[in-house]
Length: 371
Length: 265
Image (cartoon, rainbow over all chains, first blue to last red; front, top):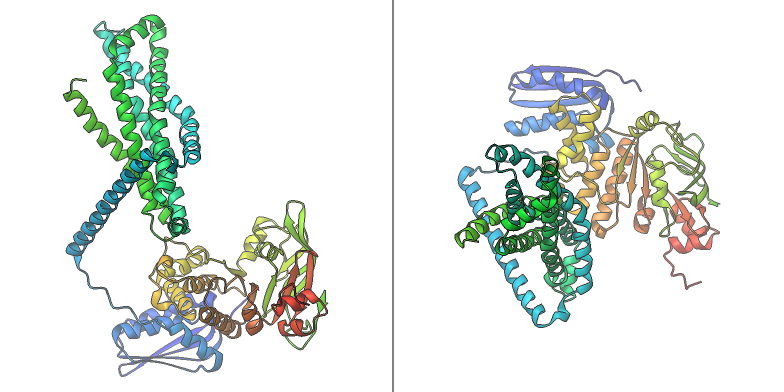
């Protein structure tokens, strides 16, 4: 559809800027009108008026011209009036100008406000964390005393979803990491004639360290995020409120089965990842003339029961961290469409950071014990 | 079908048709929910489409707004056939209507101003200042100019629906589809929304197609009401809501519009 090109006449008499617009004031033409207003408005008038008598057609975009002039005048504290409209056109313009007064700028408190807000947020997070730990501990004790309180079916389903379903990816990563370690260490070790000792490196690093770590990181990505998303969605859709009003504790109903399932499957997955990691190492060493028996005997000699248990202990701690962080992120989900996504991201990032921190602490602890 | 003719806007004489349906069947897969819909929606009309739960009104809307092709039949918007049309044609047609979804479907990461600006950014070459002014004007029309910088999560459900209408108005389309605009709103907010639809319809001449079974809105602002019946799988009534309620020969239509329990005669 073609429109009558609008003309803009701006006349200044004294300190008053009078703007007269003719033609069609619609989406297709409003851009040109807005541009034509820039120069007259730059003259810093003390009073502004707009005459729309010559406008043949105006739509919901055309009224944006009035909005521009109104906001300009109000921001500068100038009088502003519109003439040449009545009936529905006047109603259209009046409606469009409702609430258009520029908002007063919020007092900027700068760094003090920022630090204060962060401190309050940090305090709230710590409070939520402590409350969550307390609730989980109390309910776990109640369940130990009365196992019937545990939702066994949910726990088994969670084990299948977060354990069995994770077997392929955990196995693949464990196998490849074992092969990579052997591949990267073979040449430097061979220079010292310690080809067979590559098996020691693979065995110790996989069983004590990387098996549990790989498993936990996979779980943080797969399960921690899933816990946060599931529980977070339930919070947004008020399902958590519904549980509470039934008198059902969401921690017992949702969190404990997930944490328990993760606690059971993570050490098992870690052992599985370790076994495949050791096998992965042999894929590199086999072609170098080392027999499978030599390799396995060397790995066995390098490993101690303490080292094996260290790996299991780490896996268990990682499981509690990953599942706890995921569930807590879900419970702390805020409102709005982006809230679940933020909780999921938080679950993965905080989960992985917590795993690495715990690994450092536990590594130092076991080292100091001579394990 | 009960067709009741009255004075404007229910007669077709001299009125331009904004949306035309001929022999339209809608459904999922091969299963039709409603068949053989013949319906003209006129320019500048507020047309309500309703019926019982599961009657296919939302499916029909998704065919009208080009998201789901009808199983058969012809749908023309501003004379352009959209049934079986290619993507370029559908894109052209999409510029001719705006859509308000039941829950607003505002983009949560953007402010209201940014939500309304988005279509302007994508489809116009206006300057940033001009786009801001346009978006503020649209928000002003729905009474939300003072909330332009807020995120959707910071305003009420009714305000979100009004903001969604402002976004639907962004490119001044001649047709606006509204999906259950009153659902979940209190009576006062719902009445405010109705008043706003009437004001926009009168001031801008916009055609409104409203999917709803909110009787108060249908009677207070609907020019005509098209009723679908899932059991009979067809359009069973079309006409001014009051007349359908009082004198439709179809018992189900009268019962639906007079809110009579199914046990009563």
